[in-house]
Image (cartoon, rainbow, N blue to C red):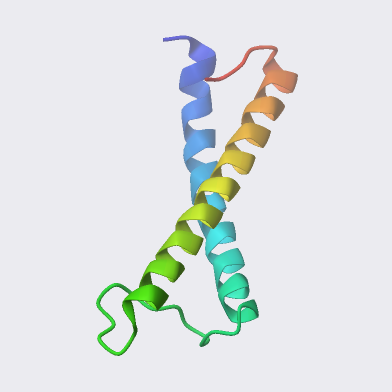
Length: 88
């Protein structure tokens, strides 16, 4: 394994944590904007309909995946600019 890949590992982990926080915030805003309750349902919320639970899970997953991809791509692009090599 190249030294640049090893050096990028902690950066990648930090970016993953940051992307999770950003995605969580965006999901909360999106859920409110769709006109739903302030907090999204969990799979074990007995009082929520299947459709609402599945909609929340789908929206959360889509937002998380998009934010994670954008943050990781930006981090890799920045690493290439700084080091001259692609970290992945």
